[in-house]
Length: 435
Image (cartoon, rainbow, N blue to C red):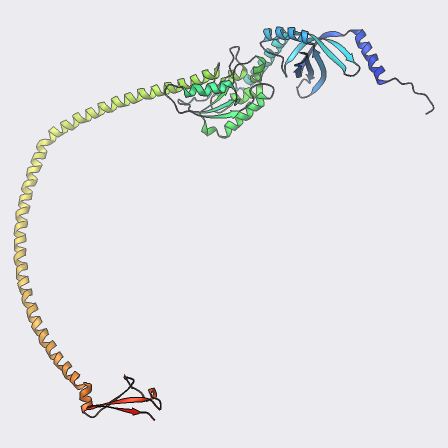
């Protein structure tokens, strides 16, 4: 602890590093992938982050900040875009000439002096060819084109940005179809450019696949754009999903240059969203014309068949007419014989029934006489019994009956001492009090 440690400040260290780097004047060409890019609206300077990935692409093995001053950036950008048809974008590999600079506060960074566009063009093409080769090796390159295209694809799943002008153009073109076909479209919104676009479009395809029975065809559309805007459509995973999708996929990505890999694996590539709509309308027009042709042929065939049937019916009618006439005459003779037979049967039956009715008419009269005699005797017996039970006759024989308050007394228990009763006799009644 008694030993004195010699130290310098951090600023002095950084200045020493800066002095070494500035003295070395390191300037070289460097290959890197853009992981971040930002252009200052105020100064016009472009700020980048360059990275290098491992051979398998799973990890970053180097990272460095870089800047392009505004004057250099304007010239380099114009040259780059004219040569490649694309803007500098995240995920793009570039070859740049850089000078290594150091700042005491901001550390080491690269100052970009120039950009070589031919490297990026070659790199883009290399990646594109690698993707195509993988798809061919996997045996999926032509799978979607082997799907059966429905003759009338009216149910359409649309993968697009909801606010894209191309989506509006697509819907307008369908609405303006000459025959006014009744299309059923459903939007599956997705990001259509940038590094997140492939996974976003794949997610949309997966959503379509969940209700695949509801759709005849899938449409992937967006408006025009620079080559860098369309780099996402060269993504292997996206192309593989399109190639293996179970129903036809139509692309209308809106560019006139070489086909993207997504275009190459799709069932059909159309140059614009409007062209996709026109293609679908054309299929329906063909189907409608085919149906009209079939309808006309069926109508002609039916008319011919009906005419042939009419001729056959007339021929049969002519052949059957004598037979029918003879059958009618035979049936008329048979009916006459049956009518005569029925007449005599009815006449005989009427005579029998008339005799039976006369016999039945005599029987009720005799029965009535016997019944009247019996009932007269029964009435006489009832009259005698009634006379025998007449109360007045009973009173005349010396009997009497008692009432209390006008009610006949039938039992001794119904009376109490002090009750007043009436005793009815043959020649009148007397009043008595019960003791």
